[in-house]
Image (cartoon, rainbow, N blue to C red; front, top):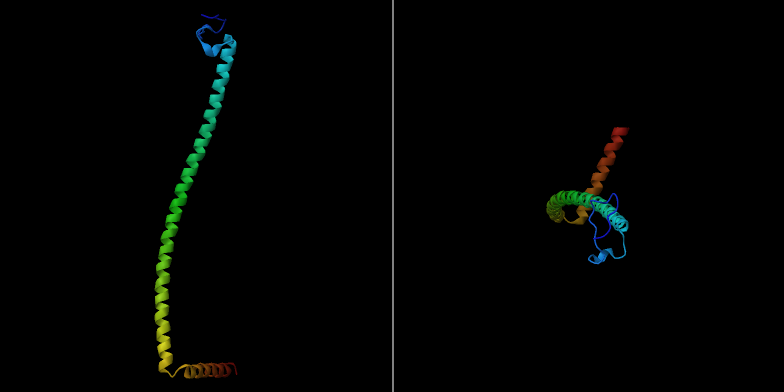
Length: 130
């Protein structure tokens, strides 16, 4: 067995012939190296704790983003349905308007009707403001 120093009576000592990792080190060097190793491990643990907290926050944020995107997808699907209905209604109105123009004699009569409506409105405004 190796030497025991005062204050380190409870620490195990190793014979340098039997313990190859303690080659050329006395007990103080071994204790100091072990202490530095533990301090480094504590710092690594603290860093891992900080990293773990960051990962948890990132996970929570990603869940929130997923929920928000799901809601927005539902709203977009509803908007798409509404647009399809509006497009269908517009097609129906356009076809009926085209049929009405054909029945009324084509674009010539339609232009005459628009001009007459404009004249009537102009006369009505003149009557009101005079």
